[in-house]
Image 1 (cartoon, rainbow, N blue to C red):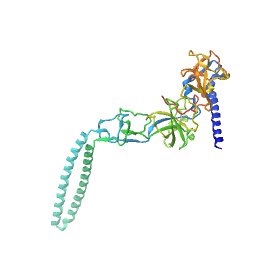
Image 2 (cartoon, rainbow, N blue to C red):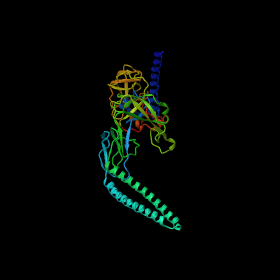
Image 3 (tube, rainbow, N blue to C red):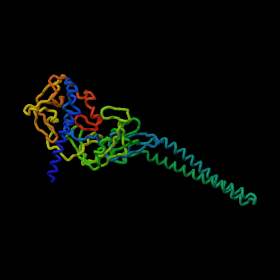
Image 4 (cartoon, rainbow, N blue to C red):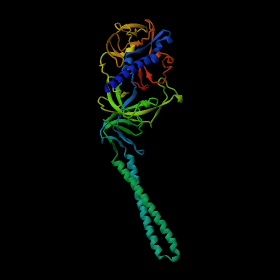
Length: 425
């Protein structure tokens, strides 16, 4: 039963790959067809087709590597920093001094507070002496004067109580000032890397921080990946599901993990529909952060940007570390013995170029090109309308109405379904 189930999954993947390839042609590359009257062939870089080849059938989400824990410290509002001892990106250990306060202001305040305290103690002594005198006079006074003395004594007792409270408050101020002077050094509470310093000149080591603290430190180790998902696709993700983290620089470098949290309470608004920015609120959509716990973070760096892909459990069985691997739909194999591609000749014209095919990946509908193409070449997807000598233009110049009339806002970029529309390498 298990073998039948696995065979069924493989069959579905193959079918999905074929459908996806057709969709790529229909939505993205059909600009080569009759809409352009055969006058212009729109071409795409081979390097881009390689990047979107093996992951083209999988949803991709933008992600950034961050730490599991941060520690922050705020600066005292009534103090001035005398010496900032760290900068953004520095590695610190627990107990390392981050900055020191200027204690000259504290010392001046302390000197004045001690004078005030001495004066208040003198005033309290005088008030106690006055109370003693009033009590002695009351004992000798006539009966008609007793009520007046009682009122004076009660008022004096209340004044003494208020003065005692004032002295306690002043003593607390003095204790705090002494503490500030003795502990003018602020130290780190964790081992980590300085992420932000909000001193008006330093900047954060990575975008997206929401900390208003004076200094924020990221704990070393315990890395995780923070991703974002559009409100239209959030239903495709579930907490606990497995994902693959893929390097932007080397698509063959991957890490495994699982989604531990989808934060639906902290949405951000995106007014981009995936292709252009708009101020129309009706086109705005919300994005939600989600977090991935990694099985291993070896080779990852804090702040590194990555792709996040749902893990289907179907690993590539073909070694693609060498050669050029592109979708089989990019190559005309009508004559299996003479495969060719429609390539830009480097002068803005289309040429029919023979290629030599090596390995194949049937599951992902990809072929290996051993000869005839380089990553710097640009090719058009064969659709039966191309002719040698046709004028060529980059895919980015294809009229928007031709490319996105039926797929605007879908997130389809080339042959890859991705929400990463605003990331710069």
